[in-house]
Image (cartoon, rainbow over all chains, first blue to last red; front, side, top):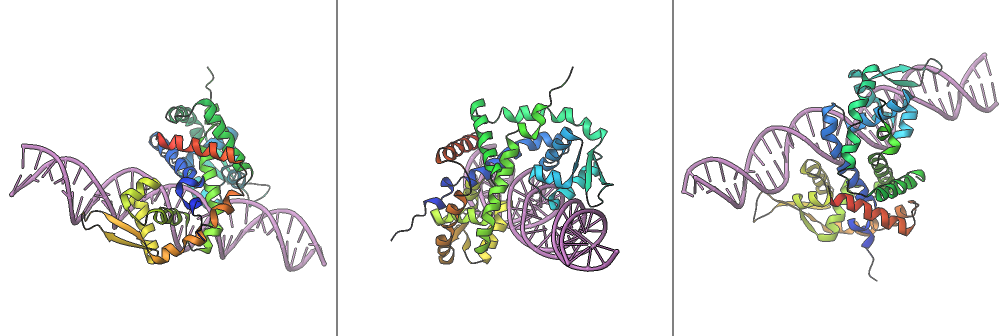
Length: 143
Length: 143
DNA sequence: TATAATTTAATTGCACACAATTGAATTGAA
DNA sequence: TTCAATTCAATTGTGTGCAATTAAATTATA
């Protein structure tokens, strides 16, 4: 009885192109982020803070699907660059609040120029981009 | 003149859900791969070798979108586990050939049980999965 | 043919990701 | 109220990813 190994082929898995595609697009960000001396992880943390000023490590982790093991050093490096402050909450000393600084806020203008540069080298039609977006969030919503 | 920062929101970027989704799905593989004492990176290297027995580091890198900086240690660890041999090509000493062993080949049966387990917890219809697949490869094809 | 340019993998150094553990603060239950 | 359980961030250790450099082998060129 011959076993069916088709599912084991790279070409038949969804995870692999997702993994490869994710890394390739992050790679497109790199030269633009280098100009701001930011990594992609630092950039998405700042995106949260540009939108809401203050956030706890826990909430940040929920938004970015990352844990404190990743976020603690990223927040420390953003703090070292002067873009973020790290303060324990007065109500609950366990909670660390990250807050954007003036200097971090000032990066927003330069950062806003990056997404359009990426968008144009991703060759999807607006409809395709919308559909991809929908499918990715459908998966994220059920994990 | 008010600047438009909408593109800077996590919810308006394609890269972020791609990045998050990729990591979340790899995370689903982890408990199954743990049983085989494999990481996801080791697993996709083996997937190539299950399909074609022998591969150079260069060709492997092209298939997986990874470079020797990543692949060298992964191949060494697979060699240490006895699943792969690493040999210089006789025709061109620069080229390293990775080849699957009997023991590596034997993992294929257990590994074949993993993809169906992942597929069922990704809540897309077959049509949606097909469309996602097409869109991801469209992006990969033009990067 | 000599040597310059290219190709290939390995190495180095840095920044994640993440599981597991730790320790402090808070909450809950007896 | 006390102490057990929980929550939260930090730490530790391992394995990637990747840019940059190195070194060896091969190919191209003068």
